[in-house]
Amino acid sequence: MGKLYLITGFLGAGKTTFLKNFIRLFAGKKIQLIVNEFGQEGVDGLLLSQLGAYLNEISGGSVFCSCRLDQFEKVMRQSADVHADVILVEASGLSDPTGVRKLFSQTDRFPHIEYQGAVCLIDAVRFPKLYATARTCVKQLAASDVAVINKVDLASQSQLEQTLSLIRGQRPDMPVFQTSFGAVDAGILDTLARAQAVSADSLPLTADLTLRSMCITIAPTMTPFELQKFIEMFLEATFRVKGFIQTTQGMYLADCVGNVVNLTAYPDPVPDEKAGRLVVLSGAGMPVRKLVAEAVRWYSKHIIAVE
Figure 1 (cartoon, rainbow, N blue to C red):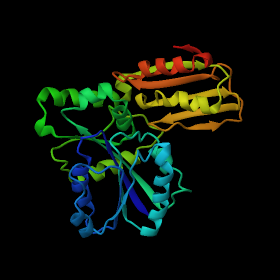
Figure 2 (cartoon, rainbow, N blue to C red):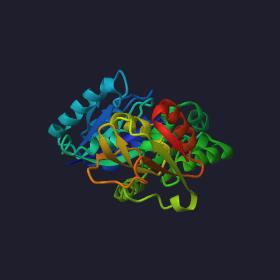
Figure 3 (tube, rainbow, N blue to C red):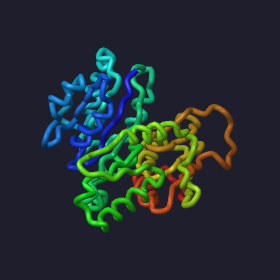
């Protein structure tokens, strides 16, 4: 079974340089690289051949958008023939990888892959501005398990503190590494392993210190598809979203942690006081109210109240 790692991060964060260092942590392993975007300096072909890596390039769009997802899944299925020990995916700097965990949780489709988590590369100098203007940065951080703040040698103390503050505001639970030139050691693999071992039923350990709760009352006029899209609009800024929601196709239990919307048909009776109430848990500094307000505007005809 191949262990798959996702490398994400906005344009110019240093993903390719990081990948060159990261790949060295798997010396002696058979490696498959799936590169959705080549950095300016490219990937050193000699390094790849020395490590026995197999390279696939997917160009013309993000591997996670609908226009390229079929090609990505095809490469994933073909990876079974490679019998790689490690599969490294370098995503486009403009990609939205929030669905990756759900994609690889479908073990029946990818039985040969064991998802090990995502690393988000962050430019210590440019991140504060990008975070405020590029929605993709928020989504990449939401989908990741570890943040690597790169180029710290170029950042002022003020820029570094602001970058750390933004990360902690959205993901207070996330382990953070600071580095220059994408340099990392094997400790990052241990950190990723611990992140994957945390139960999906558990909130981050810091959540009890800053926990914020809100409740959205939803009318029974939403379809399950609309409910999923509604939750997706703010899920990335939450610790957990949970509730019993009556839809046009019956009662559903929403139980969402991280960046995966999990809706399950619920055939058992639900007390009236619980039905239709979606509880949203977040932390101080997380932009959940702004995102919920935007989602409510989109689906206003189905929303009864927000408390």
